[in-house]
Image 1 (tube, rainbow, N blue to C red):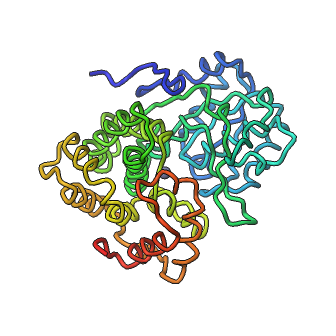
Image 2: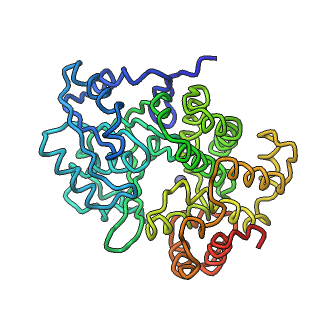
Length: 388
Ligand SMILES: [Zn+2]
């Protein structure tokens, strides 16, 4: 089977290995002549970025690079990008990277035509209606990891450095107009990041699948997304150049972010404040937290998890079988079992519990959890005590 296609759900996606050379044609479709290529400082040093710039320059496009952003991006990263956009008279954004670069690229595209500060567009109530839609620049998203799925999302996570808070900036027009999903661009990702981002994709599908809201479209997407991770994540980690595995993981990542319109849950509610306070890699935080949250949610999700276990083909299709499979997968991929192993200690439990309860992902958790419940899960995750 050829793993290639032009998909229009939830946005226009050009999927398939080797399609990066179509980037200039995609700019032409959107009327972009002077793109600002937004990426992170690590990627900016890799051959991939000069190669993409070569494609653009050969087609007569005037492109420059903005890469001054943090792994957990902050407000002033977006401000600096907006200044670079105006300084170079750009007319569109190409965001290339993992979640950080994609989120910053989308936020820059939003902010180049607004009169209000970024925080006025926090995803609260009807704040999004304040956006001047005509001012939003066209964006092409080019994912280089298979995890966040930010390329098909309508929001960016940006840290308000004054409040130490991860803020969701949301507007429907932040959904990139075009996505270039070329699995070959994810082949250079090191094993530990392939593992952490891959589990993030899995958690998006899983939390969407378990969230209590009615959204059967997302439910179906989430189930198949989990199966793809089950079948292909280990292969992608074992051989980074396995394009078939990389293709299925990139698809699973897109599916996870598509599905989580239905809601996320406690894993993300905890991972967001942990990332904001300790600068922890988002995928790694999720990967460590997942079993502890699953056990807490067990009374509400046992039947659903059994259905998922049957669908993905586990020999032991029980809740415990599913949990054991996740614990074994994490161990095989070299992911830490406890937060203590990555230097996060118990004394922060009350603060993280409080912040997790405030996080928007809390609303999608299948069981109502209090700040104390979150603090208890955090403690269990610090100690590596899955069964409580
Ligand atoms: Zn995530």
